[in-house]
Length: 182
Image 1 (spheres, rainbow, N blue to C red):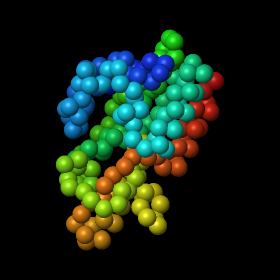
Image 2 (spheres, one colour):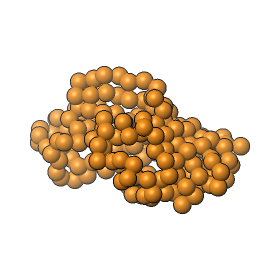
Image 3 (cartoon, rainbow, N blue to C red):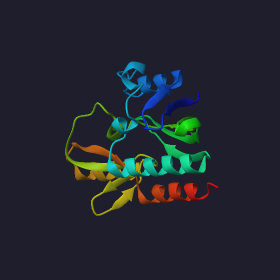
Image 4 (spheres, helix red, strand yellow):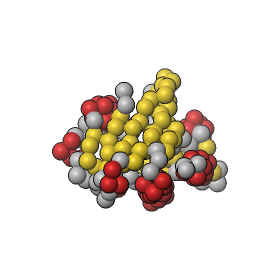
């Protein structure tokens, strides 16, 4: 199953395929449909300035070089580690096509930290949208499982609110991929 969507030269969504819709429904995005997505700016769906900046950089490089860029990322659910490959390809007139292919899934015990229905409060913590590491105060970017253990050790029973960003390692990997475009 290849999840695909495209954007025009002004970064407005032009196309989403059936696999995109199915993935959205399976991941708490049942409210997202063609009518609510097509014609909207992609930036309405990307949270956090750091993340927006890296996407702008990817778009600029792919459009300028007229060459596809390929990245690996994780998109975990509460019960599964999911590994994907994303290809951003140039189309005519500065449009871009995004094709996401699953690489593998690994089942795990439920992780409440990732459950969108769990009540949260308190300060925000940033989760890397590419590798699922979490930036913890005074600890830097740590693996998701370490974050869960850390939060359990605090014994508050309350999960922090989440915001999305990108860790330095993933940012470096993206920069390297873009440098390799001819």
